[in-house]
Image (tube, rainbow, N blue to C red; front, side):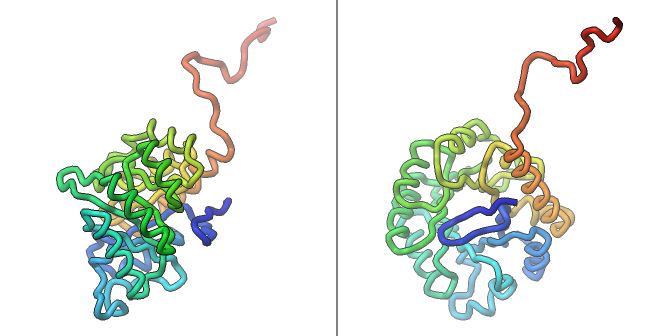
Length: 254
């Protein structure tokens, strides 16, 4: 499988997993192992800043890339503050920007997200911003130096899949950065579909955490992402409105 390059890292897996909503954080190592992912996200508000090693971080495998997110931030300034705190407590210089001040639909604030990205890129972070799939916003994020663009498939935690499919296709076509679908995926088939259109990866949490068997579901998503990527590289067959026989019958009875 081809590698994904983000920042200065080469990733063998295109599946990113979250670490929230599990009934027991001790499940995290098993989830990560089953998913065979390279990157795991964590909300900084779940980290004990006085003793990070004794918080949820103790369950994170040391050979994985930690991707703190700015969950809870409502402005760019709050997101920047969270990112700097994350780096100060040893979480590294990768950051997923989440700026959300809409508490009903939990849709990201594109203006504040762009501003936070501009600031944190200058601070030396590898910035992965979570946004709505808007072409103009994605272009500005690319100009600002984001390492990837992370558009939602559908609103956070809904499990509805790729409600934004046509918009995602536009981003894949027009934006040179990796497009990583983040939020709203509910089934492995959703992840495979995202990969089939050329998305560089998917990030998910709820679909695994709230399944009946999270470890088995993590493995299912692993295979779905790999299958979707391989299908994209192989090239899907053309779509047609007209039927076409697999074995033409012309001359068969002569």
